[in-house]
Amino acid sequence: MLSGKEIQDAGLDDWRRLAQGLHASFLVESFADALTFASSVGEVCAAAGQDPDVRLTGTFVDVKIGVDVTQLDVDLARQVSGIARSLGLKPDPAAVAQLELALDTADREAIGPFWAAVLTGGTHKGNDVFGPADRIANLWFQGTEPHETPRQRFHLDLWLPPEVVPGRIEAALAAGGTVAYDDEAPAFTVLADPQGNKVCLCTYLSR
Image (cartoon, rainbow, N blue to C red):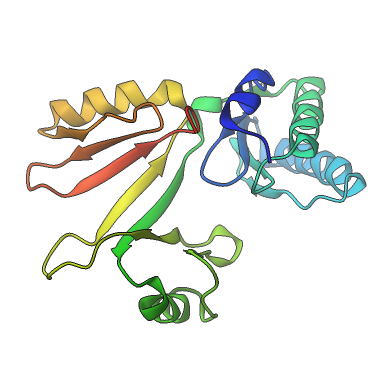
C-alpha cells in the first residue's frame, strides 16, 4: 500500500486518491465513445488481473482502480490515461468525489450487524460497511468515548481532490457555515452548518 505522498509523487495528473482507490473522470462526446474507451480500459485491466469500477454516461466516464493503492494500481492508472490520450479524451480530475457516512460509536460490534443488514442485506466485518458496487455510500464507524444521548452521531465525509477543497470551503462559509476544526488540514477540515451539523472535507494529503 502506497502512502499519500508516494501517490502524490507518482505524478498521476489525471487521477486523485479518495477514500478507497484511485479515481479519474474523462470527458467524452457520445455514449459510443464512452463504450469504446471502457472496452479498452477493461482489456488492459483484465490483462493485469484487475477489475476496475467504471461508470459510463454520454458525457463522461468515471474510472476507479484499486482500494488500498499499490504500485500495480499506479501503473494501471498510467495505462488508462494513455488510452484516454490516444482517443483524444480530456481528463476532468476536479470532478471526482466520494461520499461516506461516519457514525460515532463506542461499540461498533453492537451496532455494526444492524447497519450491515439494513444497508446491504449482508453481515458486518471490520470497521466499515461497504455498499454493493458503490450503489450506496459506504458507512464507517468512528471510535468515540461512551457518551450520553442525544449527541450528533452521524456526519458526512466528502472526499475531494485537494485543489477543489478551498473553493468548497469558501462557498460553505458564504452560505452561513463555519470552520469547526482545521488543525489537521489538508487531510480533513470539519465544517458546520448554521445549526451545528458537521461535514468533513477529506483529501489524501498528509495521510
